[in-house]
Length: 503
Ligand code: DQQ
Image (cartoon, rainbow, N blue to C red; front, side):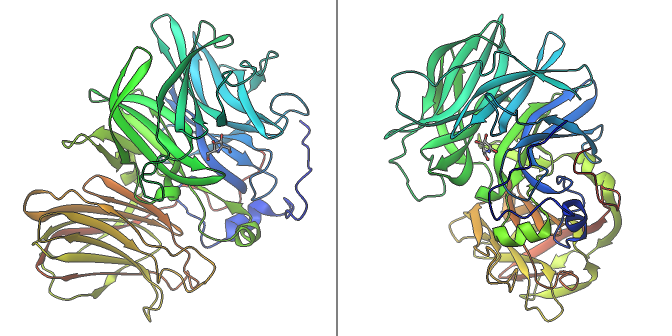
């Protein structure tokens, strides 16, 4: 295989990337990361003959988004991953000369088939590749791109990313886009053979003039559209994008019927916003809806270039429909396999605003707690705290006097490095009976995933003294009862050696 080593001027070279990545204290150890270089969206998610396949947007040459390849890893348990040969490399010329952007994998009568966005210049068009039976080796279709241009007569903001499924005797496909001056959209196509596509029309179009600047703004383009049914409701997930800015993942609930999606409501998918971006899901062989997304960096391009790697894949999540008609999310139960020593805290009232738990320490932790909050009360869980308390990350759950709840992540003191993102993140928290909150916090070096009564908040944190920022504590203002608290050390999911950039 030959690789074009041309990188934009100023991009650090690939030399030592995997070694540098491996040494970085901010690199997670039980979340999937690329061997080095750049990782973004999950692609081609599938559970094929008992094996989970995770493909991902990958640049093995630098920790920068440039001439994106498709990396590939497999797992039988969603916990331990084996690096597989790179699946797609941009062509020396042709439709994907400048990158193999996001897409999906479908089973075409037993032939694994990838539908992806080939990038050429500043544009992306749909391409197809067929795989060997073990999904390791891929042959691009000579007819690529299989759709020559976006729909005629529509002034679009962009055109890329795919959701493809079999419906009766035909294939259907959504391509993410946006109608200039109107809003984000998903264009619907139909095909008999995955190669010749008939344009049907927009499945649904958002209104970009509504809620601009808000946390549920639907943007001017929808990236990575994902349509699926869950527990009797249809869901259309997309990532709201505008003029090069990746805003946040959202989802519509509603009804997909015929050629349209009739929406009921739009919701935030993860309160971390861009830290859980471009999600993709698959229905696994157990019938579960399993979702992954890309945890973007919150440090500068210079810092990531220096680190030799960037981008984290979320933990796999099971998505179900909650009683309130919104999605509930939880890490797959398989992850408990990595739990090691457990520390328990005795139940009782939390009477202090803060108590350091000297028995719990670490930067690889899984914490599960059940709290009961009276009206007006706030409970807090602190992680990654230095002994002097100068750096600490605070997860807060609150109950207002009128019965509402909030989940809030304070990152203002997560790092004393003035160049990293320390903006707080927050969202609405549905409370259980008597103010009950089931809170789970997974800490994996710079990656943080929080689940509060099924609502997720994902983010990144970069303490400047990572070896000291191991402290954990709890506290409350107001009347809070701790009904349960368990913390486990989490084992690493990867062997302790650098991984080859070109497996
Ligand atoms: N990332 C891909 C695109 C997609 C975006 C390029 C979302 O296909 O729209 O790497 O992060």
